[in-house]
Length: 438
Ligand SMILES: *[C@@H]1O[C@H](CO)[C@@H](O)[C@H](O)[C@H]1NC(C)=O
Ligand SMILES: *[C@@H]1O[C@H](CO)[C@@H](O)[C@H](O)[C@H]1NC(C)=O
Ligand SMILES: *[C@@H]1O[C@H](CO)[C@@H](O)[C@H](O)[C@H]1NC(C)=O
Ligand SMILES: *[C@@H]1O[C@H](CO)[C@@H](O)[C@H](O)[C@H]1NC(C)=O
Ligand SMILES: *[C@@H]1O[C@H](CO)[C@@H](O)[C@H](O)[C@H]1NC(C)=O
Ligand SMILES: CC(=O)N[C@H]1CO[C@H](CO)[C@@H](O)[C@@H]1O
Ligand SMILES: [Zn+2]
Image (tube, helix red, strand yellow):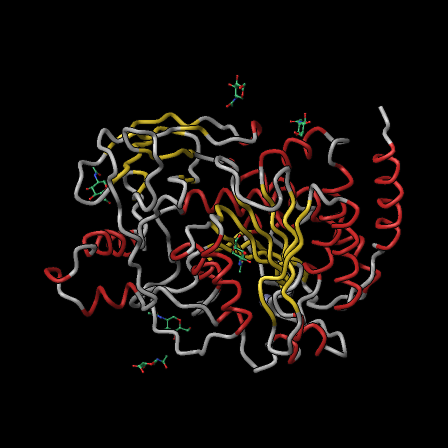
């Protein structure tokens, strides 16, 4: 059943597809492409800038989904961010091809249709447009274009959970921090180049831990990283680059090398969002004639990874009258986050968990916790996490907003005394876990 709209859509689609060849898209071409996609698919996409770079370039985000302009209760938010290091360019281009693939597959491919009907996908092709434009001579190894215009490494620029990060927060970083605060992101990946591996949190540690910096959700992170590496054409083989090897194509961030102020730890600790870092090419800025192969090698992995946003359990916390309660602490027993995960303004929570039996604990401080045992199936293929709502028997109860400081949480632990900090036992537990798994 073809309507006039469809025909117009297809014509636009052809022109958009024709415009997207395998080459590098500089700022103007990138903007033209994103605007063209939005014009061709106005009800499936939402294009907005979340801020500006030091040199005033827009930080574009294209949101895709059945409800692209706003959050819908029960629909998880997913994001991909690329080109944070301006001279690492593969992610920037393959995200444009991912956009093309998603919009052209909607209502044609049943899996992509269900994915877009049940997920809101945010795509930021470049977080460092100034660094990209500053890279005049493509180089496989390293150029000044890695940094933003102020010479700051954006992946060392976020507040750090372990160490006071003294770097001054850059406009690009601040924009992403505001964006993370604005949306209930559940899952994310940060696309880099210069290696071939999927790396997961933590990147830093407290104390002098050797070898591995384990988060309470280590099993989930390993699953997420493997989902990418095993759906990639070769990452899972673990060959890496330059004789560097990574078994199964994954690594704990800290095991590989320690860094402070990275975006993935920030997402996990303060953003309630599980993020991994994907290193997609040995050569940071490869010739354009290799881009088609990079897209082919990553396409299935990019899609399978998005589906993982439907792992685990989600639901709403309400009072006796059915009114949602924001800021309720909802965590799986035995997996305390250093800064406890809380419900959003709609009283929603999302917890990424592998299949198994868990006790979910919903707590409004000052009230009795509600505990529910859930059996989580392997349901990512259903495009919905298990649903488990909580209804408190009181009315009009309030939970105060999270008071997670931007100062290093783990350092606080070392400095403060147990008597002065109410949240300290969680921190202690966390640290004990970190040390115990050493
Ligand atoms: C996706 O959503 C559209 C719009 O509501 C609907 O027409 C279509 O049936 C849905 N498709 C699937 C596979 O869920
Ligand atoms: C950061 O600043 C704090 C306070 O000014 C100082 O104590 C600390 O040593 C600094 N850290 C680094 C890594 O420079
Ligand atoms: C935050 O959300 C509001 C309301 O949807 C929107 O107007 C604003 O642009 C968003 N800001 C960012 C940084 O995403
Ligand atoms: C439930 O969570 C709250 C807040 O994090 C905590 O104080 C309480 O001990 C937890 N209850 C159980 C049984 O784990
Ligand atoms: C997927 O959804 C169908 C229909 O709602 C349900 O019967 C099935 O058990 C679900 N499968 C999983 C693995 O959750
Ligand atoms: C507490 C701790 O180990 N912090 C480290 C975080 O990473 C920075 C940068 O590598 C180190 O200087 C810190 O010691
Ligand atoms: Zn990088």
